[in-house]
Amino acid sequence: MRTLLILVALWALWDLALVPLLGVRQVLPWRLAAMLAEGRAPLLVDVRTPAEFKLFHLPGSRNLPYPPDLSALADEARDRPVVVVCMTGHRSPLAARSLKKAGFSDVANLTWGASAYALLGGDVESGKS
Image (cartoon, rainbow, N blue to C red; front, top):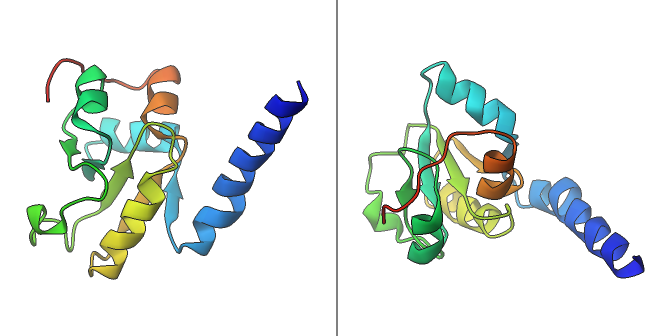
């Protein structure tokens, strides 16, 4: 039980303290679901491995495994909102920071990742890579 509490505390510290220090804005899973439902879909960049992406992913997301090949995004997203996704929200902040440093203006991280998005009822697809 003590180990579990320590892990939860470290996870909370990462999400609440360290990610903001990276200069990365957070988007909560239910907020992203609302954006998608309202037709305001950002470019979704999924930085998980191809195997993880094939297991399940958010519809319309683009798989660019971490570290992402920024040239693959070219200029398509420089002035478009981008939300970076990973499995639990711990790889994606680093990728989001890289995008910001490369000149992408509106970049956010999906808090708690694709797992939380799916567990909270968000639409996901599987089987595509």
